[in-house]
Length: 93
Image (cartoon, rainbow, N blue to C red):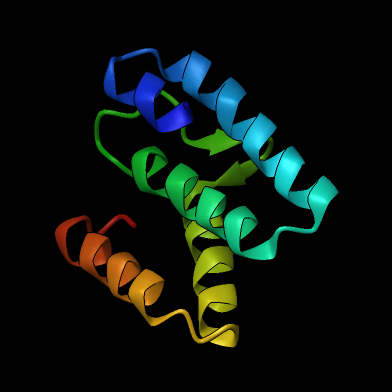
């Protein structure tokens, strides 16, 4: 839902949904989904059109770094490839 709201220009509402996604992942111990949520937050926050530079005191780079670390630890190659792909197109990521 967060990504949907971001794409339709409702960035503040997107942040609300990402908070919920992160809280759910933490509560359920769903690590893969939690770190994919971090990735989904970090991508748009690092973009030039973002009105926000952080979510709950964590900036885009930190979300992406957290996601990358866990993707490496869990050997999630597809996720690592996606992270590398956005980093190539968005040097801020």
